[in-house]
Image (cartoon, rainbow, N blue to C red; front, side, top):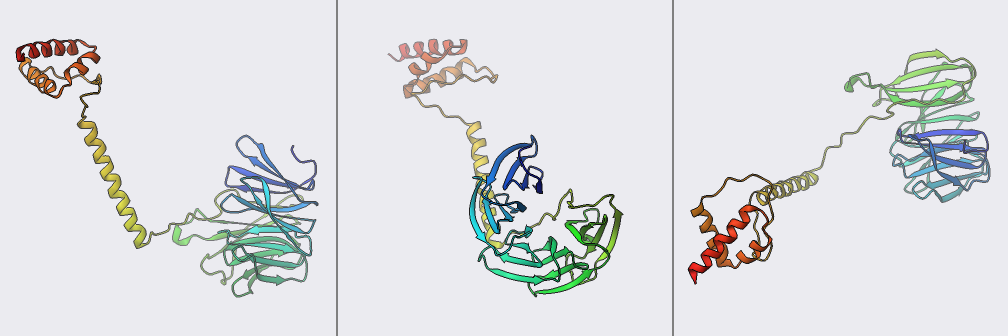
Length: 334
């Protein structure tokens, strides 16, 4: 194994890459097909508590006990920015679009906007925050040592509802869409696990997070779970309708492509040969021309001054016949 200390966090990007954080102050980037360590990200001076990959796959955020939040360029494998924070953050999570990110610091959940790097939302709780998960760009689920799972509206800065049921602290949260349902009835599923082994599944209407969530699954996990992840698609593929300008550009592009294809077909059907260039040997079988027609063609070539250069490059039997006929034609003209 690449790390020299205990692993504190694992996170995947699609099914191609994985990032691992460790108490040895490093983060490793793994290629999932071969499990080769592609890069080792160094810079933190304390245990790395959490790491999150941007939806683009080019950036990552990490928080550490050294009281810093680092932005990593995954292309170069180097630290791009370092932000000092007053306390050691436990969790960091990107939003679904990557326009914002959430950080758990002590008993607070804090959301920052990426474009302005400004604080956009803060919610304080009675005890420590141990789990964060974005339900959408504007809704956040928070769990921890306090009672219940809180569903927060970031824009309105309020708690929409509290999911009751866990009798001990919530250790982790993970979200996915219920892809077994039809599109119009599709639900958002939030899975939660507590330290006593209670695994629960909650269903939401993705358009109405203020409506009470329904408990749809429950399972007793043996032992003391510490983390949770969902295998499969976490978000639905979005179908974006092109604008009128985009449609016009697409139409022009389609017309240009059509013209190119038609021109290509025309070029393949009619091939012109310069008088100074040798005639290329074709592998396709041709019908033999009559002697009268062949003499007429050779007469035209002689008028253009192309007979000598063509006859020098011809190797096949037909080419030799054309040279002889051409020579006879020249003698008759003289």
